[in-house]
Length: 206
Length: 287
Image (tube, rainbow over all chains, first blue to last red):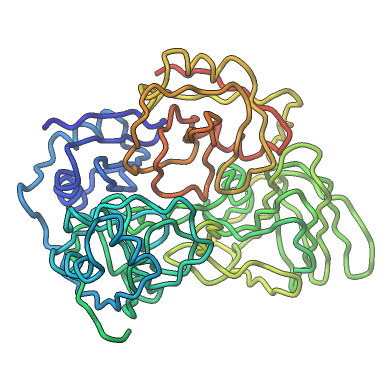
C-alpha cells in the first residue's frame, strides 16, 4: 500500500500505512538510514510520525519515505525478551469473565503466543505489545487506577504491556514481573523497543 | 536557590529522537526565549536555564556570574552583598556578582521568564538533556530553596550585544496561526471555521503538558476510536467534550484523540506565554 501523508504542523509529517506490521517495516527501513534533518521517527498503531527541521522540508521527507524499501515480513531483528510473570493480578478474574475463558486459560493464552512491541507511548519505556492471542482482547477499565505498581502486566484494547514504573493506569492487571523494563542507567534505557519480540512465561514467585 | 515562586524548573532544548522509547522531547515551553537568553551570553543555544513560572524567584550568586532574563517581562532587582538594590533590564546582559541576590516579581503579562547564566546550568544530564519533563518525571531534581545549582565553564566566545530589543507582549488576545490536520477530516465541515470564529479561554487546567481551552465546541463526524498516534507540540487534540487541548513541551508522546489542527512552531512559544483566564484566537494559515 502506498503510504498516506497527513500534515502535522510545520515540523512534522504523519505517515499512515496498513497496520502494525507495515509500520514496523517502514520504521526499520527509515531508522536504519534516517533522512537528513529528520529528528524523530515515532511508530504508533498504524502511523509513523516524522519530525524534522532544516535542511529537511515536508517534500523532502515525503520523498524519502516513498524511496524507503521496507522489508516484507520481519525486518531487522530487534531481539527477543522473555518476561517471567506471576499471574495474580487484580483484574485476572475480570479478564476471564470478559473473555469467557477460565483464569487458567487466560494465563495459557497470554504465555502461549509470542508478542511484538508495536510502539511505545503513555510513559517512558511503556511498550504496546501486539500480535498475541486474539481472545485476550478486552477494553480498558472504566475507571483508571491512581497507582499501578511497576512491573504490572496488563491487557487493554488488543495490546499487552508491562508498566515500566509506578504510574496511574487504566489497563486490566493480570500479573506482575520482577524484570526491570526501564533503567535510566542502561543504554538504551527501554528493554521493550519497537520490533522486540516478547514471550511471557509463568513464574511461581516474582 | 532561595525561593522558587509557584514553579521553577531547569530546562534546555530537550531530548529529541527518543519518541520511539516513549520519551518525549520536553525542554523550554518558550524555546525562542531560552535560545535568546543563551545567545545574549554567547552560550550554546540550548544551554540549561531556569524556567520561572509567574515570577517569585530568588537566587544568590556564589562567584561572579553573567545572566540574562528573557520570556515574560517581570520586575527584577539585584541586591548586592552590601545591600544596595538596582533594577535589572530585560533581554540584556547583566552582572550578578558574588553574594548578590536576584529577585523576580510577578510578570504583568506572559507566564514564563527564563534566567540564563553564562556557562549554563551544569546539573547532571538525564538521557542527554537537562530538561525537566513534568509528565514523564524525567530530568534533574526540581530546584528547591537551598539547592545549589552548579554553573558550567564560560564558553570561549564573549557576548557581542548588551541587549536585544524588547517587543512587549500585546494586551489583546494573541492570534495563533494553525495548519489543518492531521485529522481535520474527523470533524464536521464547519469545525475549522468554528475554531477560528471566536476566542478560546485558557482554563486553569493548563500546565507544561498542555492548555485546556474553552470556546466554540468542535463536532466530530467520525465516532470510532482513533488508534494511538504520535503527537507534536502545538497539536490541538479534541477529546469527546469537543473542547480542544493545545499541547505544550511535556505533551504525551502518543495520543488517542484526533488532532484537528496544529499551531505553527513560532506561535507555540506565544501560546506558552498565555495565562489562565486569558483568551487566544486561531487563524487559518496558508497551507
